[in-house]
Picture 1: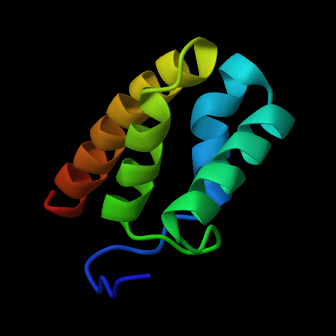
Picture 2: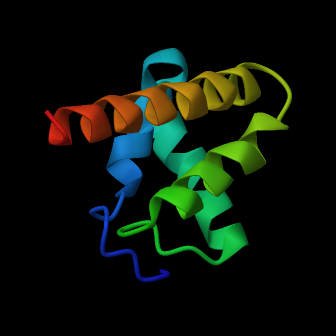
Length: 89
């Protein structure tokens, strides 16, 4: 994991929550874990950039995994943007 003081680490379970509603948590966990290992990422603690790269790698997968990953990536970006705005209020 790259060091990122500005943001807390992203755990695999957060990504499971993002795509699990479409494919089921068990399948989401399995696919995400396999992809994280393939990219050499620590699934317990990723930077935001690593988490986005993981979803981006899955976005090219055909079918519901790819679609869920593309939407999941967008949802995470929006969530993090909202969190950043709240921090400045």
